[in-house]
Image 1 (cartoon, helix red, strand yellow):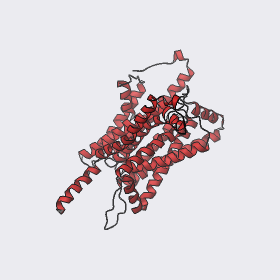
Image 2: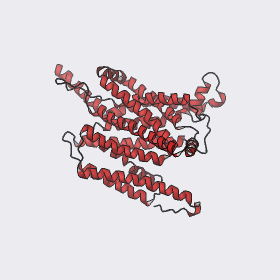
Image 3: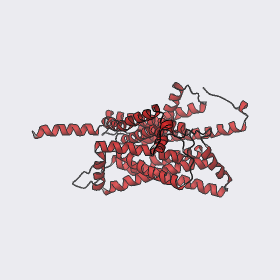
Image 4: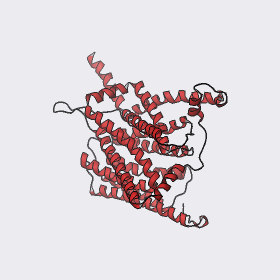
Length: 418
């Protein structure tokens, strides 16, 4: 009887640890919130609630379901205003601001990367007699990140002047869901592949984006975009093929890591595209951060409560104070990193931000190798160098194209797309 009781428990544990099972379990939790919400929204729209509604709940329902529908013809009004203020400041102030932005982004995301790898790949409470235990619930880490980001964004919106909000609140839920799933895939992937591999995969997501744009949207690209995409592919291939195979990783495990990385890229691409569409409403990036994180907190907390994982994760934090510190620091770095992203783009534009974050990716690989002992061969190192050279080439070529298009009349702008 004892043996027969142990086998089902072991099978249950193995299924509970399988990433695909957890993915569908989390998705079911999100669906239990989204489906009733969708039905309510359809009900209010069918009832023409905007015309017939009244009472205390009317402003809340109007904001959540209908919004003010006031779209901006210039979605970059807020960032352009901030950019104009920047142009009027002195060179010294500009340099100090740039150093502040670069230092804030590097400190936030380098610390976040180191802590992310520590939490997902190392044990807690290990002693000479006790091997310790690993933290397994990636969704709880996503919840921790989002609850602090929601708090920071809410305080920022309350303390600073923001544009009048016009978007229906429910529209944030789609970007929120894809954002949660991309973050979850990112955390889970570290259980199956190394952190440097994950960073390079993120750097190479321009390739599937271009492929999808060509196949689905019939987009055309410049020659230099194809060249840099090929260079990135070559660099990533050099790194992956030269990496020494881990004896502990099976083919199935490696395949799981690749699938999770692909999931991260797909969900992250959807998030950015949906957010671009939402910016047609007049809103600031911090308002976007607040709206997305409202639903992220709702989805993740609901799913964690339904699975009973919230209490289990809280008990793990109580058993291991070191993990509690790491989880809180991880959330702080994520929340303030987002604020630094918005501030840097508003002050200096996307090109400067891309350069800073590309450097951050290179530093993140170096830090991971130094702290956690990832071995990189000479060929692998050359592959990493090729990837980052291609990324910098993309930034340089894009900035040159923008300058040329501004100098030339619209009729004389050269178009060399295929």
